[in-house]
Length: 221
Ligand code: PMT
Image (cartoon, rainbow, N blue to C red; front, side, top):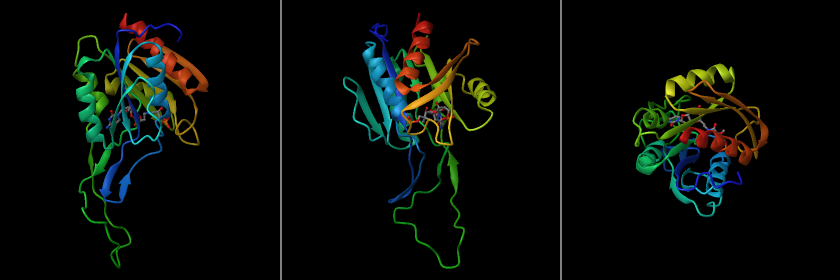
């Protein structure tokens, strides 16, 4: 990553985890810290890119020289992403996005009800932002990169996810058991729609980020 091989490029990165509110005090969320997405932003900036970072609830400091857009829910992330990718050369979706959100938002704090031990929470599907960005490229030749967070059958699930999402590259990482979420290191296999498979051993999240940018640069030509 010493070369400024992303100079003149605009890259969009999502980071962190969405929060889907139930009421003014509660949400459905996940354990993403934003570290992997912020590492992608910092390394891209170091390689000369103009960087837009869509940050979902991360509490990390804004990386120097990066345009940071703070969002919270999946719907807000989608809005910000659709706008940011319009003139982007590449987009990397590292955020952990909730697949579902509560169907109803209660404007007052939800109360316990006597005799009701299993209160129903109805969920509805969130839009799949990565699939949408992949299907409707904002620009010809725009490169779309997704992540896959898997707890089991990691590679098989990753390959299936690559086909389903329609992105150019999928970064498959194992989660659960203290892996990836919140850690300073990560390991992954990069799967290309072109059949490429690159194993990246456990190391700093910046090192994985740089390997991802290597693959992006190679495909941007
Ligand atoms: O933030 P850290 O603590 O550093 O942890 C990093 C990480 C584990 C969160 C990161 O490396 C990671 O795996 N991010 C993706 C998490 C995720 O939501 O994976 P998924 O397999 O559920 O989703 C697959 C892909 O579709 C992802 O690129 C996701 O951003 C995208 N997606 C998912 C659902 C949805 N409704 N819209 C989406 O765009």
